[in-house]
Length: 132
Image 1 (cartoon, rainbow, N blue to C red):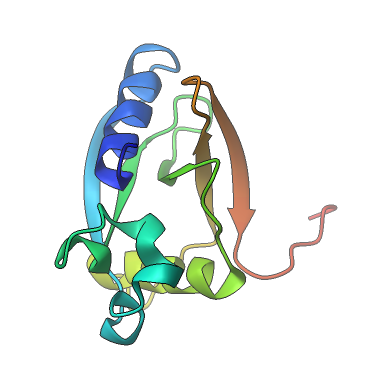
Image 2 (image 1 turned 60 degrees about the vertical axis):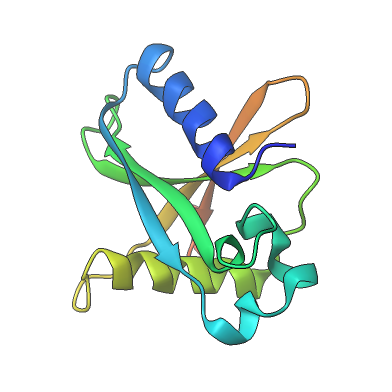
């Protein structure tokens, strides 16, 4: 099975050639060591190796529809993702991108199925009013 770097590369190809995103780069997000040691709960964030379990690979690129820079988290359909994991990813992106004074409001989650299909869902930080 693909690890998250492999999933990120698969999603990157899709975004580049099918959705025509531009300036796509990979941001490596370090997970806190207390979670990196728990291979069962955070195995989805790495390849299963001793050092890779503490890394999450997030794509950063320009969405052609909005013209904004967005972050994309590629995960396998079979992996579990908790609210705590999502919170750590939001915080990790801000730390990796040195955005201490600017918070990230949403990320685009790319869920990859075993047949290669990809579904995209926006995940907002916290509760978001649908009318705003």
